[in-house]
Length: 147
Image (cartoon, rainbow, N blue to C red; front, side, top):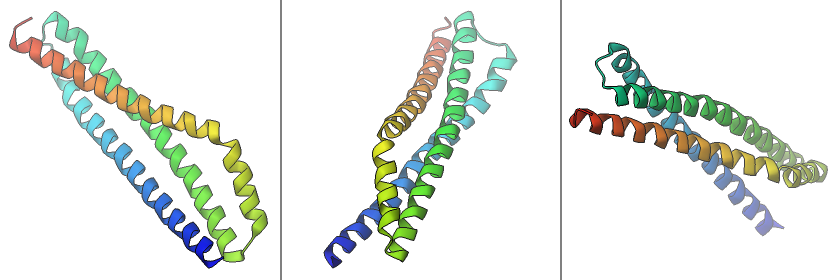
């Protein structure tokens, strides 16, 4: 039983660390997206752009801003779910409550679809961020060739 408790505690600690790294990763991507979009807005407003740049830069800004919106939504969802999980597991561990553990296990089994959807949001944020950066790079390269 003590071995099982130690394994559960290790799992609990690893999950906390994983939550922290996911939160940090999304937070950094959102900050970068905001900084790049904030830099691009005055550039686009200046109007000193070629026709292709006038097309690429708004798409880049839109992609980065969508990454921010979806990322914030996803981050709040992850934090809310993980906070609920941690508090349930903490109560179950403190009270040696097998019913709370069973409730968690049932909810955990039912939320496998939600976990897949959460992974989809993470990928979507990363894809939008990368797309925004690629469009910006294309606009900068085209500026060098005066296209």
